[in-house]
Image (cartoon, rainbow, N blue to C red):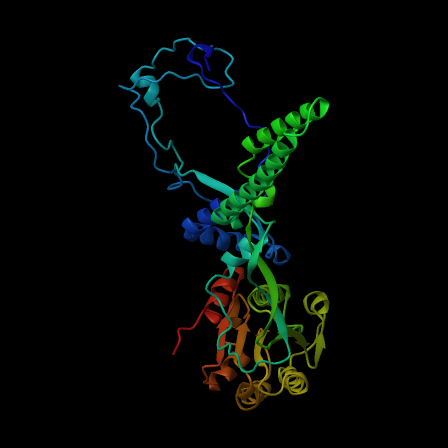
Amino acid sequence: MSAARGMLRIVDRRSDPPGRGAVNRERFIRRFKDDIKRAVDEEFDKRSITDVGRGGRIAIPGRGLAEPHLTHDDSTGSRDFVLPGNREFLPGDTIERPRDEERQGSGDGAGEGGGGADSFAFALSREEFLALFFDDLELPNLERTRFGEVTMERMRRGGHSRDGVPSNLLPAMTVRMAIARRIALRGAIAERLEELDRQKNTADGEALLALEREITVLRDRRAHLPFLEDVDRRYRARVPTSAPATRAAMLCLMDVSGSMDERKKDLAKRFFALLYLFLERKYGHVDVVFIRHTETAEEVDEERFFHDPLSGGTLVLPALELAHRILLARYAGPDWNVYVAQASDGDCTADDGRRSAAFVRETLLPGLRYFAYIDTPSATGWFRRSSDLWQAYDAIESPAFARRAVHDRGDIWPVFRELFARRAAA
């Protein structure tokens, strides 16, 4: 700025403290939540299953992002300023006002072949991505049947702390602590000054000069006590506390027989991975059991469940019976809320389908909160008909049982939302 006007330009090059923009970021996500959720759903279709849980960059339409503000009318207003960083103008130079046709531009709007919609891209953290990804979802019929020995840590308000992020700062308490500090220091300095004044009455020579110098230093210190220091800051504190947790168990059953080609296995794996991320986020303590089956069934770990190849015929009943044995051995009694999710192409014998449906209806469902069946039928040809297992499950009528068909990757998310949408309270 011009020195004649007596103005000084100050450029602050200090880096921003951590968490300074947390409040603004939270407000931005809350304001444009609908657009961000649509972008997150679109991003899901583009990602591999191993990348679903990561954050990343998403883009939303740029319309509506501008904040309201007042501006001068370029045609009638008069403004004198020089933008920093230019190489052509100096303070005091005059700039010719552009003609109307130059100011308005020579373009014709959006141009040819374009929609004219700008986009705004920004990064979401993993927690923000999953919070939007699983918004409004829950395990159906989740109940707090009994408080057992299982506990989980929850964060709760726990007084105040001298350390914290800027969003948790308590301004009123910080000011009170600053006032208390200044009162205490001024009181101590006043007592010392009174003592030095008494000593001056009996001192002379060098001793008197030393007392006067100390008195001057103390009075200067009292006059320049800082308004705010680091020790004055107070933040909201949160401490982990142990709280009773609802016990829940989720059993994942998947057909890995020869009729389950790579497309069907990919759909099933994507559904279970999505379910696993959902459980990981929603509940403090959930046991997840993986069961795969061909003619026989076995319990495996997550790595083998998703990646270990296997082939053979298809029998569904052995997997259901193994699931029942696991429930009796580990999750019997009223302490557990148990859920079963099954994925298959439904290619089984008619007798196995009838026996499986009867077993689910009569043996499994009485001890479950929810049973979800995902059917992955063949994509083309005569096999578009309903599978044998799908038809067999027609005989099951229960609010704790649901089934949906998944034909391609685009069906997974809508089906998942439909199966695990939040139920209205009865």
